[in-house]
Length: 150
Image 1 (cartoon, helix red, strand yellow):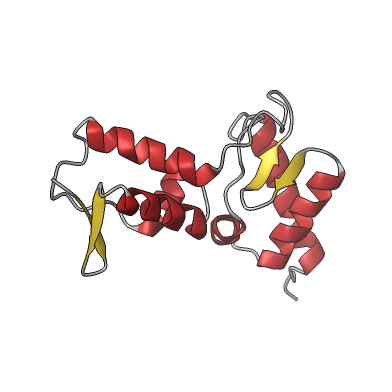
Image 2: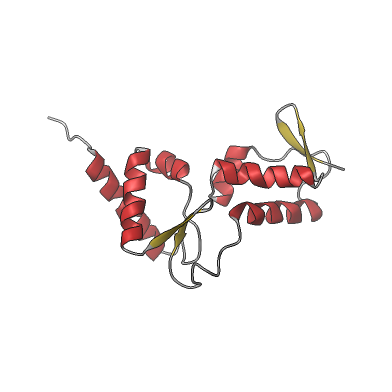
């Protein structure tokens, strides 16, 4: 016989892992958890298991959902203080890196997936940040890639 993994055991593993990471400081209070998509891939469970775990953590007031932003770890600072949209934080960091010369004119930015993993955020967050930088004419699209303007 083999040991089957059902939805409840997967959900419990996700919840246990997130609680451990929060206690260990991987996700400190006031920070956002990685997106559901990233958690699903990293933990190799279904999205439903991730959502059940996040919902249970919210019921225990360990995390709080912030619409259009993600799951915020409760604690200090209070959730009301950390309400700046995540895509603006990502865009600000990329803007600083461009200004500092880490991404020189003509350089190709990392892929969206790489940026999602680096900033631990969702796909739409990265897209919005990149669109903002495109509007500011700091980057432009070139055959599916994003290139720093000179």
